[in-house]
View 1 (cartoon, rainbow, N blue to C red):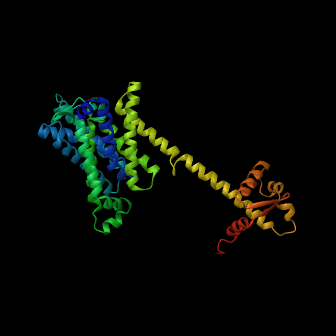
View 2: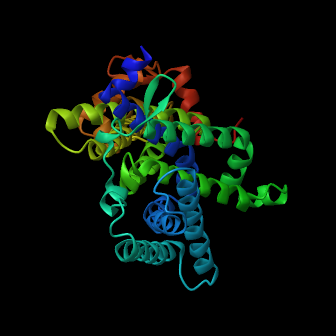
View 3: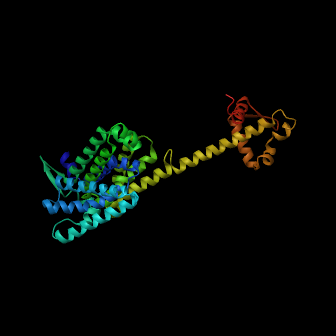
Amino acid sequence: MLAAMFDSAPLMIMLVGALVGIASTLVGTFLVLRGNSMLSDAIGHAIVFGIVIVWLLTHQQSGPVQILGAALTGLFTVVLTELLVSTRRVKQDAAIGLVFPVLFSIGVLLLNLYARDVHIDTHTVLLGEIGFVWLDTVTLGDYRVPQALLSMSAMTLLNAVFVGCFYKELKLATFDEGLARALGLAPGLLFHGLLLLTSGTAVAAFDAVGAVLFVAFVIVPPATAYLLTDRLWLMFVYGSLVSILASVSGYALAVAWNVSIGGMMAVMTGVLLLLAFLGGPRYGVFAQWLRRRGQRRLNEIRTLAVHLYNHEGSPEQHEENVTRALREHLLWDDAKARRVVTRSRERRLIEDSGEALNLTPAGRELAREILEPGRR
């Protein structure tokens, strides 16, 4: 059964894609919440520089040394960005835009000058090809396991352990850095550790989805989860589910339409983000429209209750507290007046007495709460 699973190219492709998304979600959630999402873009480009430097020093094209070296390059990118920001001459977004193109350009130049005959292709590093992950395998016992599956499994586990061990500290440092510093939690050290794992995840992922598409996985699933919940632990759950769904649906559509698998997986993360933006239970466009409509209807009912209450017991009550008078006093057309009266009647706030509209005790109490808010 295990051998058949590892020999299944579609399963391995979808599994690697899901692991890239889950590992990216674990670190990307904090980047999204901190407003540092584009640091992942800087890291994704700057690792080319680290990959080339590590090869020049060790002549290793892959392995733990390559991952560590490139991860340190990602951290170096962040340090340079922070140094520029500390000068107060440029803002963070401008600093990111200055640093990573320089490192990326140096990496490409070194690659063309000193590693022209080495199999380190910038196109592969940036875009990857997840459709071939099942071909690059290593032997574990009696099984041949895709190398990308092992590397992404290790990074997912490492990220999960880091987040699990420092969950409370990361949460406090993300939402209240000043308090975390006052409690001696070293939020800066935690953040740099998070960025180091982000860099390592980017390096481990570039064989599968490429550094550019990695950016989509590290930002979009957490952003989608952010639209669905306000709880941090649920953001991890929803982000992981989005990654799995995007990987499965992206592969199926890529095969059906004969397009890039990694690219279609990234597109599906965008589609799921759009669905969350439109149909999210709290922040979705449709949910907000329903709340606004409900609030508008409630305000209309309150307006009617106040109108009836103001004329209740007055000599002109029989003329004012009727449906046809609402058009003149409240500027409602006949259809709207009938709708509001019907809703108020359904809520048992008013009752009919011939043509007259009379408040019930509940309707009278509602009007008093509006006109006398400090009465209680």
